[in-house]
Image (cartoon, rainbow, N blue to C red):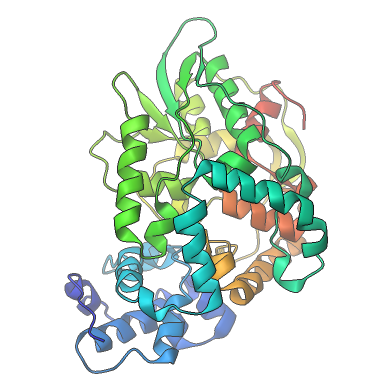
Length: 390
C-alpha cells in the first residue's frame, strides 16, 4: 500500500535533532525509537517514498501515538504530528482490524454522535458496571456517580443583573452524558457574571473522529457544531474540553479569544471575586491540547491558580496522563502504563488533589486516584466564588 501524503515536505523537514524524544510519553514508556515522534516521521517518510512497506511493527509504532502534541511544542521545524497521524489513520483504516479498533469505530459511528444511543449505553453500563469493574480491562469504566442519570439542562440561562453579552456553551457528546453537572455549573457561573448563556442541544464536535482518521465525519460534525454555537449575536463560544476547543478552533476564522473557557472568560471580565481558596496542596493539570495548541487560556489558568491555597508542580516530565480520547479503548495496556507513571508522579508530590478539566483526563485521574481527589476547574471556581461547596 502506498501512502499519499500532501504533507511530504513536513516529513522532510525533520532534522532528527531528538528534542521531541523526552517530550513523548510513549517513547518514555517503551524506550523504542519506533514509538517516538522522530521514529514515526522516519517510518512515514520511508513508506511514502516507497522505501518500505507498512509492516506490523511500523503500523504498531504509528498507532501507539497519543496525539498529545507535546512534540509539536518542542519541534524546531514546526511539524504537526496531529495532522500527520490523522492523515495516516485515514488512509490505513482498513489495516486497523483488531478488536479494539473495531470497537472504537463502532462507538464513533454508531453511538457517540447519537445522544439517545449514548444515553442508552451509559444507562445500561450503570447496571453492569459493578461486575465489569472486577475485570482487568474494565478499570477505566466511569465511577458510579458519573453513570447516574444526568440532570436536565436549560436551553438558555439569562444573565444576572446587567447583561455583558451572549455566549454559547458546548455540551459535547460523552461529556454531556457523564459531566453534565459540570456543564450546568459552568452556565451558572457565567450567568452570575452577567452573561446570557445559550446552550444548544448535545452533539459531537468530531475531535475524536479526527484523531481516529475519520476525517469526513470529523468535518461534518465540526461544521454542524459551528452552525449551532457561532450563531448571530454570540460574543464567545465557551468550551470546557481543550481537545474539543482546539479541534473547533483549528479551522475557525473567528477572532482570537472567540473560543474560550469559563475560567478565561471570568478572568478577562474582571468581575469574579474569590471568596475562599481551596485548602491543601493542589496540582493544576493542564490538558495537552491546552498546552500544545493555539488556544489562549492563560488568563483563566492564572485565575485557577489564585483559587488555590497552595499550588505544587508534579515531578518532571510533564507528560500526558494517557487518556487521549479513545486511546484508552484503542491501546488500553500502553495507556494504563502511561497513566500509572502519572499516578506515581502525583503520589510522590504528596498533593491532596488535582484540578483537571478534559473529560477523558478526568475519567483517567478518577480511575487512578478516586473521585474525591479530582476536581474540575468549574467546580473549583464555584467553590472559590461561594456558589457551591466541595
